[in-house]
Image (cartoon, rainbow, N blue to C red; front, side):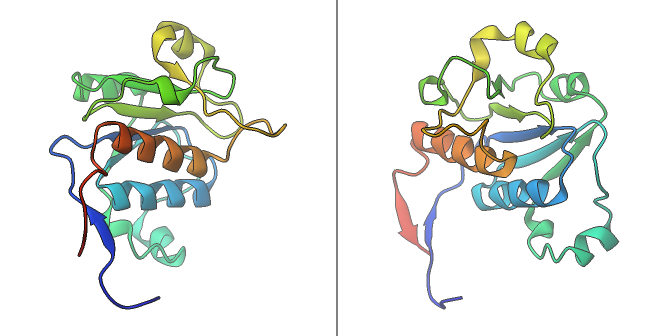
Length: 170
């Protein structure tokens, strides 16, 4: 890696919350965790995980940035919303008809992503129809990989609230 200063931006006073509901694939969660650490966003893991995140598993996976992640676990999404009643939910689904580029992101919001195999439940999506977004693709793929979707949505949210406007070398 090249030595020297890196391009940085100031952290938000109220960071975004990245919420993964029942993630199944360890590398996807690892990459989402890296995005969370890089953006100073809290990472919330909800429900049953398809892998372990104990110290041994994290060390074995070589996730040297894991200590930089503001990590929280919740048994259910309801537990998350109870713990963070001020967090507006933005739900991401490949079948949504509204682009994430139209989302009205605000600091402290929760960016919610479902499990890789089936996404978020239809009941959850139906409960928040005005907050369901998709990332459009140009090709015929079903959707982006979970970790890519997390990165795209998080950086768009940061851009939209002006968090990337004043960069510096640090």
